[in-house]
Length: 201
Image 1 (cartoon, rainbow, N blue to C red):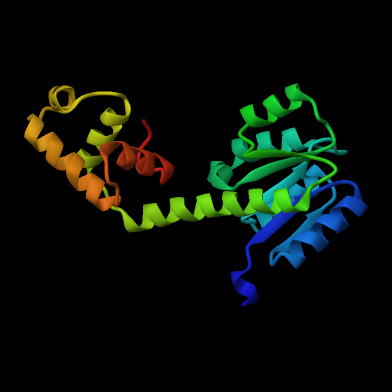
Image 2 (image 1 turned 90 degrees about the horizontal axis):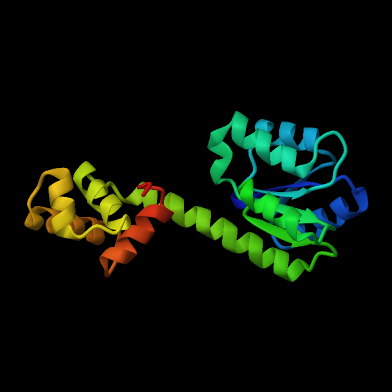
Protein backbone atom coordinates (compact mmCIF):
# COMPACT_ATOMS: atom_id res chain seq x y z
CA UNK A 1 0.00 0.00 0.00
CA UNK A 2 3.08 2.22 -0.26
CA UNK A 3 1.60 4.24 -3.13
CA UNK A 4 -1.31 5.36 -0.90
CA UNK A 5 0.95 7.03 1.66
CA UNK A 6 0.65 10.81 1.81
CA UNK A 7 3.86 12.52 0.71
CA UNK A 8 5.37 15.11 3.05
CA UNK A 9 8.33 17.33 2.26
CA UNK A 10 10.35 18.68 5.20
CA UNK A 11 12.57 21.67 4.38
CA UNK A 12 14.93 22.05 7.34
CA UNK A 13 18.57 23.19 7.34
CA UNK A 14 19.41 21.56 10.68
CA UNK A 15 20.16 17.99 9.61
CA UNK A 16 19.57 16.54 13.07
CA UNK A 17 16.10 18.13 13.25
CA UNK A 18 15.39 17.08 9.66
CA UNK A 19 16.34 13.46 10.43
CA UNK A 20 14.16 13.47 13.55
CA UNK A 21 11.21 14.87 11.57
CA UNK A 22 11.68 12.29 8.85
CA UNK A 23 11.87 9.44 11.35
CA UNK A 24 8.89 10.52 13.47
CA UNK A 25 6.60 11.20 10.52
CA UNK A 26 7.61 8.00 8.68
CA UNK A 27 6.68 6.06 11.83
CA UNK A 28 3.25 7.70 11.63
CA UNK A 29 2.72 6.32 8.14
CA UNK A 30 3.84 9.16 5.87
CA UNK A 31 6.26 9.03 2.95
CA UNK A 32 8.77 11.72 3.94
CA UNK A 33 11.40 13.44 1.82
CA UNK A 34 13.93 15.96 3.14
CA UNK A 35 15.49 19.14 1.74
CA UNK A 36 18.17 21.12 3.59
CA UNK A 37 17.60 24.65 2.26
CA UNK A 38 14.93 26.68 0.48
CA UNK A 39 16.40 26.18 -2.98
CA UNK A 40 16.51 22.40 -2.55
CA UNK A 41 12.97 22.53 -1.23
CA UNK A 42 11.69 24.43 -4.27
CA UNK A 43 13.38 21.96 -6.62
CA UNK A 44 11.88 19.02 -4.71
CA UNK A 45 8.37 20.52 -4.90
CA UNK A 46 8.59 21.01 -8.68
CA UNK A 47 10.15 17.59 -9.25
CA UNK A 48 7.54 15.64 -7.28
CA UNK A 49 4.82 17.78 -5.65
CA UNK A 50 4.16 16.62 -2.08
CA UNK A 51 0.76 16.54 -0.37
CA UNK A 52 2.03 18.88 2.37
CA UNK A 53 5.15 20.95 3.11
CA UNK A 54 6.80 21.53 6.50
CA UNK A 55 9.28 24.37 6.21
CA UNK A 56 11.76 26.03 8.54
CA UNK A 57 11.88 29.84 8.34
CA UNK A 58 15.52 30.78 9.01
CA UNK A 59 17.56 28.95 6.38
CA UNK A 60 20.56 29.69 4.17
CA UNK A 61 20.14 30.51 0.44
CA UNK A 62 16.37 31.04 0.70
CA UNK A 63 14.25 31.57 3.81
CA UNK A 64 10.97 29.77 4.41
CA UNK A 65 9.12 33.03 3.74
CA UNK A 66 10.86 33.36 0.35
CA UNK A 67 10.00 29.76 -0.55
CA UNK A 68 6.30 30.37 0.07
CA UNK A 69 6.28 33.71 -1.79
CA UNK A 70 8.08 32.31 -4.84
CA UNK A 71 6.00 29.18 -4.88
CA UNK A 72 2.69 31.05 -5.00
CA UNK A 73 4.07 33.56 -7.55
CA UNK A 74 5.54 30.98 -9.92
CA UNK A 75 2.91 28.27 -9.59
CA UNK A 76 -0.57 29.19 -8.37
CA UNK A 77 -1.47 25.50 -8.73
CA UNK A 78 0.40 24.92 -5.47
CA UNK A 79 -1.85 27.35 -3.59
CA UNK A 80 -3.97 24.48 -2.22
CA UNK A 81 -0.98 22.48 -0.98
CA UNK A 82 -0.85 22.85 2.83
CA UNK A 83 2.27 24.74 3.90
CA UNK A 84 3.27 24.68 7.57
CA UNK A 85 6.11 26.75 9.02
CA UNK A 86 8.42 25.22 11.63
CA UNK A 87 10.53 27.67 13.57
CA UNK A 88 12.40 28.38 16.76
CA UNK A 89 11.14 31.95 16.47
CA UNK A 90 8.29 32.55 18.85
CA UNK A 91 7.84 36.05 17.42
CA UNK A 92 4.27 37.22 16.93
CA UNK A 93 5.38 39.39 13.98
CA UNK A 94 6.91 36.37 12.24
CA UNK A 95 3.77 34.35 12.82
CA UNK A 96 1.60 37.15 11.41
CA UNK A 97 3.91 37.49 8.41
CA UNK A 98 3.72 33.74 7.75
CA UNK A 99 -0.06 33.69 7.94
CA UNK A 100 -0.35 36.76 5.68
CA UNK A 101 1.78 34.99 3.08
CA UNK A 102 -0.72 32.12 3.13
CA UNK A 103 0.87 29.61 5.51
CA UNK A 104 -1.67 27.13 6.85
CA UNK A 105 -0.09 26.80 10.25
CA UNK A 106 2.87 27.73 12.40
CA UNK A 107 4.62 25.28 14.73
CA UNK A 108 7.34 26.41 17.14
CA UNK A 109 10.33 24.32 18.16
CA UNK A 110 10.93 22.18 20.12
CA UNK A 111 8.28 20.30 18.16
CA UNK A 112 5.50 18.44 19.92
CA UNK A 113 5.09 15.59 17.43
CA UNK A 114 1.61 14.63 18.65
CA UNK A 115 0.38 18.16 17.99
CA UNK A 116 2.24 18.33 14.66
CA UNK A 117 0.73 14.99 13.56
CA UNK A 118 -2.76 16.28 14.44
CA UNK A 119 -2.18 19.49 12.43
CA UNK A 120 -0.91 17.51 9.42
CA UNK A 121 -3.84 15.11 9.60
CA UNK A 122 -6.46 17.89 9.77
CA UNK A 123 -4.84 19.86 6.91
CA UNK A 124 -4.71 16.81 4.66
CA UNK A 125 -8.32 15.95 5.55
CA UNK A 126 -9.42 19.46 4.60
CA UNK A 127 -7.75 19.20 1.18
CA UNK A 128 -9.34 15.78 0.64
CA UNK A 129 -12.80 17.14 1.44
CA UNK A 130 -12.29 20.05 -1.01
CA UNK A 131 -11.32 17.61 -3.76
CA UNK A 132 -14.29 15.37 -2.94
CA UNK A 133 -16.75 18.28 -3.05
CA UNK A 134 -15.33 19.49 -6.38
CA UNK A 135 -15.40 16.06 -7.99
CA UNK A 136 -18.86 15.09 -6.76
CA UNK A 137 -20.76 18.37 -7.18
CA UNK A 138 -21.52 20.01 -10.49
CA UNK A 139 -23.26 23.34 -9.87
CA UNK A 140 -25.06 25.05 -12.73
CA UNK A 141 -24.13 28.66 -13.45
CA UNK A 142 -27.41 29.92 -11.93
CA UNK A 143 -26.92 27.79 -8.79
CA UNK A 144 -23.39 29.13 -8.36
CA UNK A 145 -24.57 32.73 -8.90
CA UNK A 146 -27.35 32.31 -6.33
CA UNK A 147 -24.88 30.90 -3.78
CA UNK A 148 -22.38 33.70 -4.41
CA UNK A 149 -24.99 36.40 -3.80
CA UNK A 150 -26.27 34.53 -0.73
CA UNK A 151 -22.70 34.51 0.58
CA UNK A 152 -22.65 38.28 0.06
CA UNK A 153 -25.68 38.63 2.32
CA UNK A 154 -28.39 39.13 -0.28
CA UNK A 155 -31.97 37.86 0.14
CA UNK A 156 -33.77 35.80 -2.51
CA UNK A 157 -35.70 38.93 -3.59
CA UNK A 158 -32.48 40.92 -3.99
CA UNK A 159 -30.77 38.06 -5.85
CA UNK A 160 -33.76 37.81 -8.19
CA UNK A 161 -33.34 41.46 -9.15
CA UNK A 162 -29.56 41.15 -9.56
CA UNK A 163 -29.55 38.08 -11.83
CA UNK A 164 -32.83 38.77 -13.62
CA UNK A 165 -35.01 35.96 -12.31
CA UNK A 166 -38.05 35.81 -10.07
CA UNK A 167 -37.81 34.87 -6.38
CA UNK A 168 -39.33 31.40 -6.94
CA UNK A 169 -36.64 30.56 -9.51
CA UNK A 170 -33.88 31.82 -7.19
CA UNK A 171 -35.23 29.70 -4.31
CA UNK A 172 -35.39 26.68 -6.64
CA UNK A 173 -31.73 27.15 -7.69
CA UNK A 174 -30.62 27.57 -4.08
CA UNK A 175 -32.58 24.50 -3.03
CA UNK A 176 -31.04 22.45 -5.86
CA UNK A 177 -27.54 23.63 -4.88
CA UNK A 178 -28.25 22.74 -1.25
CA UNK A 179 -29.31 19.20 -2.25
CA UNK A 180 -26.22 18.73 -4.47
CA UNK A 181 -23.96 19.86 -1.63
CA UNK A 182 -25.77 17.59 0.88
CA UNK A 183 -26.41 20.62 3.10
CA UNK A 184 -29.36 21.12 5.42
CA UNK A 185 -29.43 24.92 5.16
CA UNK A 186 -28.47 27.58 2.62
CA UNK A 187 -25.75 28.80 4.95
CA UNK A 188 -24.21 25.33 5.12
CA UNK A 189 -24.45 25.06 1.32
CA UNK A 190 -22.56 28.36 0.95
CA UNK A 191 -19.87 27.22 3.41
CA UNK A 192 -19.40 23.88 1.60
CA UNK A 193 -19.28 25.57 -1.82
CA UNK A 194 -16.58 27.98 -0.59
CA UNK A 195 -14.60 25.18 1.10
CA UNK A 196 -14.74 23.13 -2.09
CA UNK A 197 -13.68 26.20 -4.07
CA UNK A 198 -16.82 25.90 -6.20
CA UNK A 199 -17.54 29.60 -5.67
CA UNK A 200 -15.58 32.72 -4.73
CA UNK A 201 -17.81 35.13 -2.79
